[in-house]
Length: 115
Length: 111
Image (cartoon, rainbow over all chains, first blue to last red; front, side):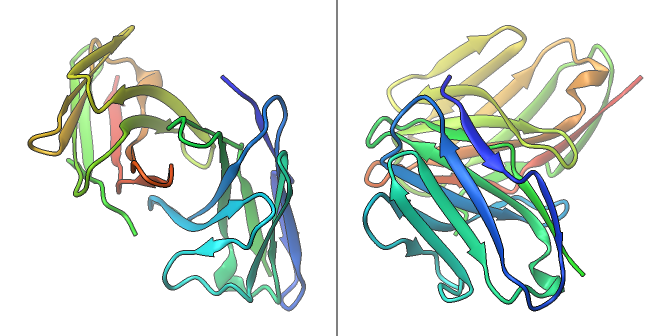
């Protein structure tokens, strides 16, 4: 399968600071990337859909001003958690897909801890 | 929003036994996928079954799909300790390739 690289795998930051997470498709062009958040012992919740060259579409209840998504190229999407709070501590996972192929490939995830 | 519901939420069985997990969903789908996640780790893609398929096998895994009932099952035969993990079904909707995950089943294989 295709490879999606997510970086960093772990990050600890102070409250009030911003953190950027990168998601790269290494061997294919991803027309769409998705960002998920997972709290302990819970499932993955879709946060937003990111299409190259256009604004991200956020799921209901997700603050777009807090979770900034940029999909500047067909191989890179970034998620920036702005003004992070301890309640933003979570596991964030990205996935990348090729349009209408119905298959997506997941990054390794980023564990964010806000102290 | 989530549209998949796994059943049971947690399952403990003896090593060597078969484990069956079920998943139900709500809307039309392009395909349904099963993933495994070890505690605190990333996702491992197990198997994908398309909406026009009814059954699929991969090693010790057997997946069925009933689109009329909007349900799927994952059977793991001859379970091993290494199968201990959370298992999620995920559906891909036709229109936008979104993958929506169910709540998951936590499987624990007892030695």
